[in-house]
Amino acid sequence: MKAQEKTKSNNKLSVLWLIAVAIIAVSLLLFCQFYFGDSISNKTTFYQNTHINGVDVSGLTKAEASEKLSKNLIENKDNIKLTLKNGDKTWVINGSDFELVGNFDDSLDNVLAYCNEGNIFQKKKIENQIKNEGLDVNIPYQDLLGGIDDKLDSIVSEIEKEPTNSAVEFNPDSKVMFSITPAQSGVQVDRLALDQAIDEALANGEEYIINIPFEEILPSEDMDNLLENIKLRSKFSTNYAKSSDNRKSNIKLALSKFNGMIVEPSEEVSFNKTTGPRSSQNGYKDAKIIFNGSYVSGMGGGVCQASTTLYNALLLADIDVLQANHHSLPASYVPLSFDAMVSEGYADLVFKNNLDTPIYIKAYGTDSEAIVEIYGQPFDEGVEIKTRSELVKVLPHGGDKIITDTSGKYNSKVLYKGEYYRLKYPQEGYESKGYIDYYKDGVLVKEKEIRHDHYQPQNGQIVEGSATLEEGMTLPASNVKYISPQKVTKETIENAKKKWNIA
Image (tube, rainbow, N blue to C red; front, side, top):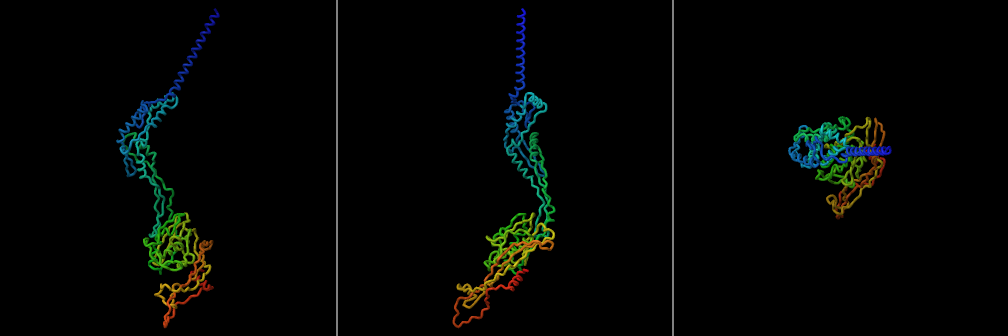
């Protein structure tokens, strides 16, 4: 009896244990389904009170919402009219001007992804929040209307401007040569704020007026004190009072190409490029030039005096001269080693602004003088620059050379043997050096050799007739005196120094 009762008791406990296990298993299954089930199966419709671009998409699937949004945009696109204003300027954007390129897929996917974040408890929280507060999503209309960005870019380009700093105006022919243009602030449109304003306007209605947001951009530096740092650094002139009108015209024309020139720091300037080809089309005329040791007629004669005047002004202003050339004959209007011959194709005057600020060139001609003035930052107080020529030696000429006129070129001057006509006087040559001397409070503190030149001596030329004197004919005495080869003496050297004003 007791055994039977014990067996029944054990069976009862087993049944109760099995029931308990089953209850736990069912509870776990239900919990897992409750906790994880919605995370596996995402929501495919939008929560109540969800609006996209002002359109209610509550309870719709992605496809249904896309269709509804597209239909709404098509129906209302042509009613869009945005008036953008900036000061007294107005621009109108009409929806009818743009092509519909609306693609809502990405935005709709993002909204659904937001609604499906987290576990079921988190999703429930999001659902309740949307139902109570609403979910309003705006898709940028730049993504929906093709070409609206281009239109906005065009409007912005009309408004925006870069700030400008104060600048020097240089008018070399005016009584007041230097003046200041005031600095001006720039304008920059706040494009992000403008895009947001357009999105909000289109979400709230088809017609809207928007004041374009912008900010003022101040100049990077104030240069109102520029004029205080512009002084005359040098002035140099050469005389051409005895020149022909054509030669004077050529000099003035070449100088005019530099008049008013502003040379920025580190900028290089070529004389030949600036003056252009020496041609009649460019206004140049025939005048005497030095060619192979002789004066001959040539287009643009006199331009070398313009380049020489500029060259010396540059030296006195302490501006770097990168290229300069001497003539075959010394130029009478400047000391030895301070001429600057120019010729198209093989000889140029090139300089570079080695200062930290611009230089300003005033170049002009009067009836008697070529003048160049150079302005820029002032020298340190007490500093003065001078140029100096040194005669190294006199190079003796070889005297006269007699040539016979066998071609009859000089028949109007000479016909017979024993008749003479001087074509050219002999000229002594020179070896010379050019220096720049730097003074501080009147004391020489530095000297710099800048040139070492050789002006080759030139033989004289006498032409003699070639015909034989007929019997009974007597030639008059010739007034052409033959000059022998030169011998250099102390007197020769002193005369040369005096001629070229060399101490």
